[in-house]
Every structure is written in structure tokens, then in C-alpha cells.
Amino acid sequence: MRVFSSLQLLSLAFGVSAIEQRDATLAYNQLQTWYNQSIGLWIPSTGWWNSANCLTVVANLATTDAAVAGKAEAVYDNTFYKAQEYNLQMQKTDEAPMYLVQSHHGAHLPKHKTTGFLNDYYDDEGWWALAWIAVYDVTGDRKYLRTAESIFEDMAKAYGTTPCGGLWWSKERTYVNAIANELFLDVAAHLANRAGAKSDYYLDYAKREWSWFKRSGMINSQNLINDGLDNATCENNGGTVWSYNQGVVLGGLTELSRATDDARYVTKAKIIADAAIANLTDSNGILHDVCEPDCGADGSQFKGVFARNLQILQQYSPETRYATFLEHNADSIWKYDRSRRGNKLSLIWSGPFIKPANASTQSSAMDALIAALAT
Ligand SMILES: *[C@@H]1O[C@H](CO)[C@@H](O)[C@H](O)[C@H]1NC(C)=O
Ligand SMILES: *[C@@H]1O[C@H](CO)[C@@H](O)[C@H](O)[C@H]1NC(C)=O
Ligand SMILES: *[C@@H]1O[C@H](CO)[C@@H](O)[C@H](O)[C@H]1NC(C)=O
Ligand SMILES: *[C@@H]1O[C@H](CO)[C@@H](O)[C@H](O)[C@H]1NC(C)=O
Image 1 (cartoon, rainbow, N blue to C red):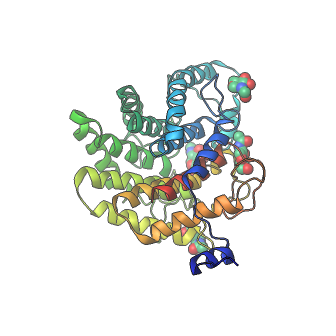
Image 2 (cartoon, helix red, strand yellow):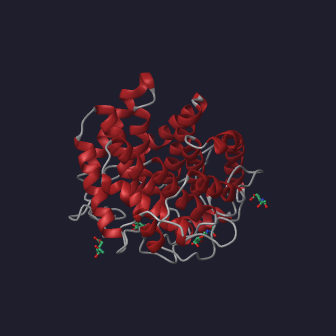
Image 3 (cartoon, protein in one colour):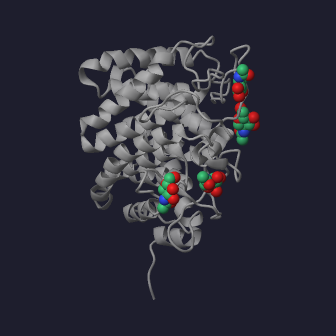
């Protein structure tokens, strides 16, 4: 008869099984079945800004996974050259390209000229800047850092030009929302810690954005961040509390703490993280967005952004409750939200696996796996 330890018995009883590095490698292999080599993007499986998040996930996984690191080099290189060309091409077509139709809740064609990783959405630009920073972090290749810096310049040009303050969502200048402003903070704070002689330049933007953001009204009385500001009054518009809006700010504040040695930013980040976990988890501590199961092409990305940024906070200033949260979510994904054949990961982290799984649901879930593995 086999003798079980009490821990093993517990595991058997409750089906507990900790996520392992090789699971993340398997998830990576599945993600790359959706990678479109000829355009360097995860299209048509997912869209333009989601592809920036896929790239971020690949770079983050490559920092700890030797099996992935070797293969990922070719992905950075291919995406760097091909995706820019694809973006340019898309702007020239008359019919709305698929990724734009699906993105941003039926947004129309951009009217402005675009180059490289720029388009009409400041949030999209922020995602690409962060992706190239993640690639710079793992490769040390400065061309990726320079790309992030040049994307930031395009965002900075519009900073402070809205009647409410802060940054517009898009070049159409119709809405001031949380995500574009959080990404502006996050990119500026990341660059402040990486840009050498130009660090103060970025730090100044990060500080200004945060001192505006915390008083903008976007953070409500429960310390949750709503979608954006009312166009007419510049007050909180009561929009949905999306998981990603509780996430990006955590990375931004952590990088700001690192750049300044001022712990108050991290203290505030923990207040937001705790409020989000209380508001957006089920009774088992698993994260959800209110759109589930119909989150469209954008909402399917959100939860991973929260997990990724909680890990950035966790690495800088650890808390047992965050480690537990990340482990539970990763284990739940692997156990309940995975396809029977292959290693596809789908939208609802508490399960069950639902179709379609795609590069968006996969990369989002992988954010949680990677975060748990790093904890
Ligand atoms: C890659 O993207 C191009 C452009 O959108 C598309 O025509 C092609 O079918 C895609 N390839 C795959 C394998 O999906
Ligand atoms: C006002 O805000 C909404 C988002 O709540 C946005 O969709 C809309 O385009 C904005 N602009 C105007 C001019 O109404
Ligand atoms: C989460 O926050 C929203 C908006 O602040 C609120 O309406 C909702 O009741 C909260 N839900 C939970 C479970 O706390
Ligand atoms: C990816 O899957 C999610 C969740 O099933 C779905 O909401 C989304 O529309 C899919 N994305 C695309 C581009 O089809």
C-alpha cells in the first residue's frame, strides 16, 4: 500500500496541483500555432494591440524559460520588421481591416497617417511601447528600447491637451479614459528606470501623470478605477471596472517607486490591488471580468494584464496574499480552463474550457502562469 503524506492527501482530495515551468512551455507552443510568420502578428487569431500583449508574454516567459528563450529571439526579430510593414499596409486599404473592426468595440478606420507601431489609439501605442521594453529587458538590444522611446514621444505630444487634463484615448480626441493614461504612466515610469541620461525626462512625465491621475476622479471611493471621464463634466463616468485598469497602474506605480525610492507609490498600488481582488474575484479567489462569457476581442485580454502587473508589484514588495492569489489563478487555469487535447487556455479562469480559445485568451492566461511561476 502506498503511504501518502498529509499534503499529498490534501492534494488528492482537493485536486491541488501546482503549476510548473514545463506547463508554461507547453502553453507557449500552443500560442505560437497562432503566430502569423508572414506579418509577425497573432492575426487573425487576435488583433493588433492584443499582439503587443502576446509579444510581452513571450518576452516575459523567455526570461525564465530556457526552452523558450532560444526560439523567442526569432519572434522578436520577425515581429519587429514585419509588424511595422503590416501596420502601414493596413492604413492604406479602404475597407476596415479585421483587427480594427473587432477592436475597440467597432471602431472605424483611422484617419491619421501612421508609421511603424503608431496608430490612432494612444492605448495601442502604449501596449507596443511596453512590449518593446519587455523585449529590451530580455535581450539588452537597444534598438527595442529606442523604439519604445519613439512610441512614447507620439503619446507625449498629446499629453495635457484635453480639457480634463491627462491624455486622450485616441487621436480623434473624443474621450479621456483610464487605460491610455495608465499606459502613459507605465511607459514613462519604465523608461525612467532604463533610459540612462534621459531618465529625468521620463520621470517628470510619470510624476505629472500620476499626480493628475490620482485626482482625476477616475479612482472611485472604493479605490477601484472606472473606465474613464465624462466628456462634458470631466468627472468619473461610472464606466465598467475592468481588470486591466486595476492592473496597468500597479506596474506604473511600482516602477515609479523604484525610480524615486518613494514607498508611497507602492502603498497606493497595494490599496488598488486589494480593492480589485476583493471586487473581481469569485468565492475561490479566481479573477473575472464582468463581461464573461462575451468579452469580445478586447475583453478577452484584460485579466492577464492584471496578473502580470500584480507580479511586478509582488517582485518589488512581496505579500503572501498576492502570491496565493497568483498561484490559485494559475492552478485553476491549468486544471479547469484547458482544452482536453492540446494545451489551449480559454476565457474563464475558473473553467470550464470554452471555445474559441485564441492567441488572446492564451496569452492572457499565460500571464497568470508566468506570474505564479515567478512568485
Ligand atoms: C497572415 O496574415 C495575412 C494578412 O492578414 C493573411 O492573409 C494570412 O492568411 C495569414 N496567415 C495565416 C496562416 O493565417
Ligand atoms: C464621449 O465619451 C464616450 C465614452 O463614454 C465616447 O464613446 C464618445 O465618443 C465621447 N465623445 C463625444 C464627443 O461624445
Ligand atoms: C464591484 O464594484 C462595482 C463598482 O464600484 C460595484 O458596483 C459592485 O457591486 C462591486 N462588486 C463586488 C462583488 O464587490
Ligand atoms: C478570442 O476568444 C475570445 C473568448 O472566447 C472571444 O471573445 C474573442 O472574440 C476571440 N477573438 C477573436 C479575434 O476572434
